[in-house]
Length: 178
Image: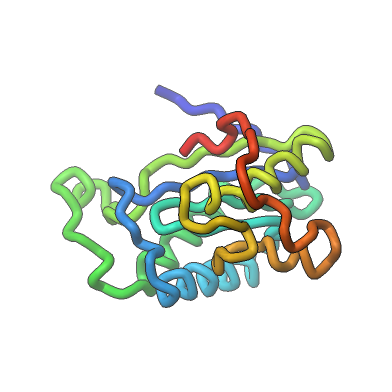
């Protein structure tokens, strides 16, 4: 099966990446820090704006905006995943299967990821809210502000959200494809 991806220069994209077999790779602050460094490393050579992000134990959601004239998020994701895999605690890297060995793949990430090109400002805002509410949706915290691995505090500091936003039940269609 061939997957079709929307490659739009300078576009904004929502992504969901899931760990292989939903292993809780990001359960520790140390692993999340390695992921942060992977993003910084890739952004230093292939810039993009990280508009919003949440990292949960077994998956992450984020929005990137690419520079004008650039539509290559696929290479960036390959580099982020590779950097993390090479630099994370070796205990997080299980032995790859025979197929993964043959393909020279690691067993940390699901091979594919979900991507959605954001169409307009309303679509962008809806996905930012989905990202920030995700730890509450999964029952990790009662408020987005209580989750440590999220861009939500940055949005509160800039006045986009009140600190109490997202407490209680919110209704989102399943846009994250988790």
